[in-house]
View 1 (cartoon, helix red, strand yellow):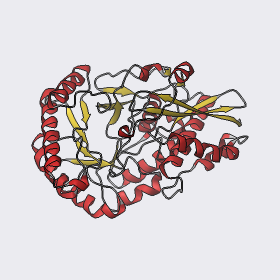
View 2: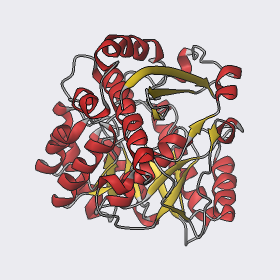
View 3: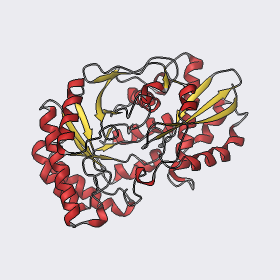
Length: 386
């Protein structure tokens, strides 16, 4: 079975989001789908695809796989690695369909038939006040989620500490967190995504203030850059002393890139993103590496239903799996873009899919109806973060 065509497919979801997909077409009529969503970098992704396309066209699936390897030091950075990761997902989708097996059956021994899910409300929440976070948490609990992730520290910037405006934003974020915790009830865990907004001192302040409510984790609290590793280790130790996990590493690539997280004990939970980190192949390696180092795995999954399904397949075989991220839909397009079924939430969990391949086809009519558009600069994360 040979690759005859690769189609880039972009869908505008909202003023905040475009989704990027790549579809591989084979000479035997099977097609596979992969996701590479990377807000604001779509044009660069197209250039990366054009660069590798001549090398892949005409190759068998097995010949193509080594060409889709990702590296932390790659010149193309996350944009190039996202394209390679998406193409690996698409190849594995085809392989699963050809074998009439779900992708997870090709990855290793299945460890579970369902996963606990948390609701990421960051993109769907419109009222970002204390009351808004409380109302949203209450609604998510009513829908059956047993864990909810919020991102309440809007406006906090690490290079502006200390500053009265920054301090006010921090205290507001803490108030939003306590309001969400109270509204959701004692049986619902609260997770916080901090988007690398804090210095070491600011991060420790947040840990102390939130320790009484015991958040499930603090995610991306401080910079994960190589020069920031000593501070990250100290913050992780401080969080653990207060009974709180530290999570992160959503932009890290390949098992090779995760070695330092194990060696230096930087985090309690790693969150590799299957559409950046190298697809299924590298996620399996990452989970084995980090699991052996006593670190838990939770997939970073804040985009389309395809990434949800792909991450479910990877989670099925991960021995160190902890909890699964589900991005709450920004609008109806989340359900419209998919042909196939997404798993329903049952007792706070999703079942592992068992359809051949990944289990999703793209609705081309929706793709044509909502083409990619340039996002406003304010919708792209500030480069000072991270």
